[in-house]
Length: 76
Image (tube, rainbow, N blue to C red):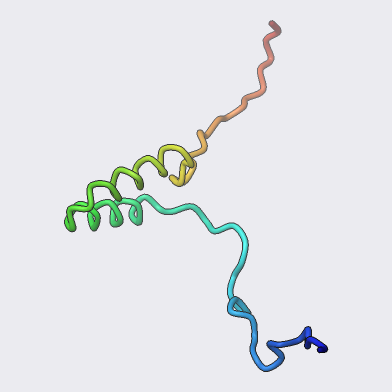
């Protein structure tokens, strides 16, 4: 009883040609769209889980503060 190791010779992988890896963070507009849809369909549990996920994992885009360093001629 010999087993063929290449059983899917005629089929391609389900994710062939798709982007894999880390996805970009959700935009604020997308987050609010998801929240509104969950509210309109009265899916309270799903809305709570979504809000918790956003809080814990921070899917919001990070706003980096703009800091300007200026050269000072005065000493400490």
